[in-house]
Length: 57
Length: 231
Image (cartoon, rainbow over all chains, first blue to last red; front, top):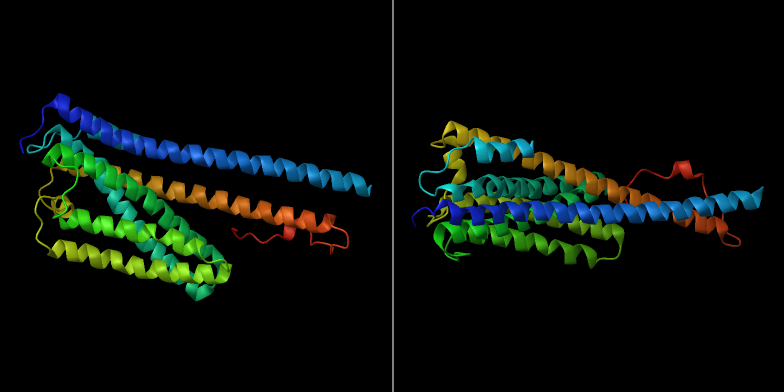
């Protein structure tokens, strides 16, 4: 097959690099959501531990 | 590193004489494939470490290496299909050993998830997952050699070109892209392991607090003694 003209090839190249960037962004977004959940749980546990300490004193 | 690679791809590496601009996909597709396959082999080696030591941390490392390999594999298949459409006029060529063999390897590793999560006992799960990682990891280089020996139809033999007739600018760009992709893989593996480790520690902490709070619950050990193992 002959080489595609730049305007047509550009779409494919942009598509391929776009897929790569999207994959990374989606992964980072998922990790961000997980991190938020961890932070929320940590907050809950900190509050629970503080309540226990207050209850003892 | 990846930003440098992308800059080199678009401003330094020359256009391919045969394929033209569309060959730029090579610099994302091939490093993704190489890193994913090496990740699968490394996961097998980590599985060996788990079976030797029975330390669950090796199992988690093996699992995360496979997980990242599968994510990178999705990237390989999609970028490859786009490149195939641009270069050959078809999204997929079933006669081509390189494509089909990668798909087989990818599907093999996709089956790792149901295998892993269908076993409830953590020790047995870790053992079976390690055996899978080793077997499948050994299959990857065998598959690679078999594909090399096969007569290819349209897919180029990339590593031959790297060692042979790839121009210096292209080779440098390719190597920088490969290094960038490897660093990205390692960073994501580290991130995933840290996240899993933190979640495991939180679960332990919650359990300890709940045990302490329940009536008649045994006094838990101090929180600082929680072992540093991922859950």
